[in-house]
Image 1: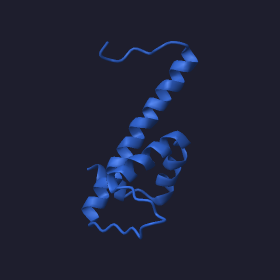
Image 2: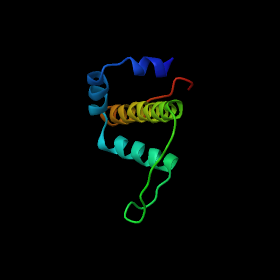
Image 3: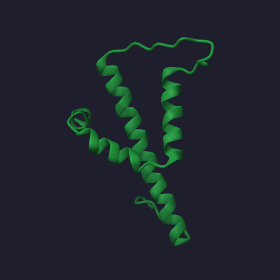
Image 4: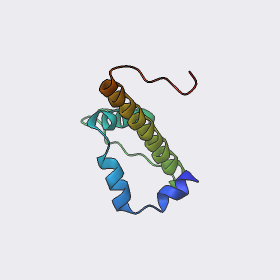
Length: 92
């Protein structure tokens, strides 16, 4: 269902969501995707990756879910620093 939802979002909405992400979160996601695809130095290799639409969509969803999780944790960290103490988890 998430994949279908994402496929029906206009590019402007996705661009706006991407703008709200900090450089640290972008770096973590980039590192994560590079780890999934494999990382070879570009100066010594002509790298081409071939996949089908479903696998690419799965990779995109995985990266987006990682981004959403990291963004939530980033917001929690900011909230904790503003309040000066740790917020309890819901299960505590």
